[in-house]
Structure formats: C-alpha cells, structure tokens
Length: 116
Image (cartoon, rainbow, N blue to C red; front, side, top):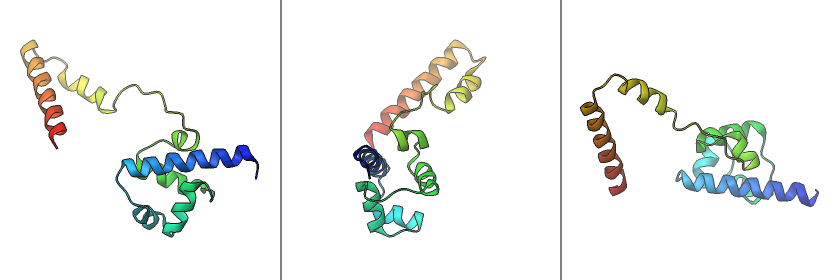
C-alpha cells in the first residue's frame, strides 16, 4: 500500500475515533451497531482496516457527521442549524415585545444547558 493511501486511511481512522468519542460511544457500542467485533473497530480507527462504504454510511448516521467529513475531513458549508428556518417562520409576525420574550427564553435555555 502506498504511503499516501495509508496516511489517508490513518487520518480517516482518527476522524472516526474523534467522532465516536464526541458522541460518547465505546468501540463495543459501535461494533454492536455495525455487527463487527470490537477489534475491527480498533483496526478501522488505527487505519489498519479499510472501511466499507456501507459501514461508513452507518457511521456517519451514528456519529451525526457527513460522509464528506468522515472521508475527507472537509466540513460542509453550513447555512446554520436546520431549525433556523422553522424558527424564523415561527416568530414571523410577532410583536416586538413577544420577540424580546422569545430571545429571553432562548438565553434561558442556553444557560440551563451550560449548567448540566
């Protein structure tokens, strides 16, 4: 295997490890979802085993990441959270006072989340 290909496999494995840890899953958890052994997950994360396309697709869903990110490391351009459009429509037509109340509630939610 070429050095470049192995380096790309290592980098993908590292992204997969970081994504798994970020969502708080163990290698055993991931192995159970994919129907693989834990050593297989270890080898994927170390770059010692290729990741099949179907496995990568399942990992992307499990880790809430895009296939592009997992395979290339390139973050997709974001237009903001998916809920942003819904929120904009939901507050459309509210009075200035009501908009201020929505903003205060959003701030309350953010602070509550930080305390957890």
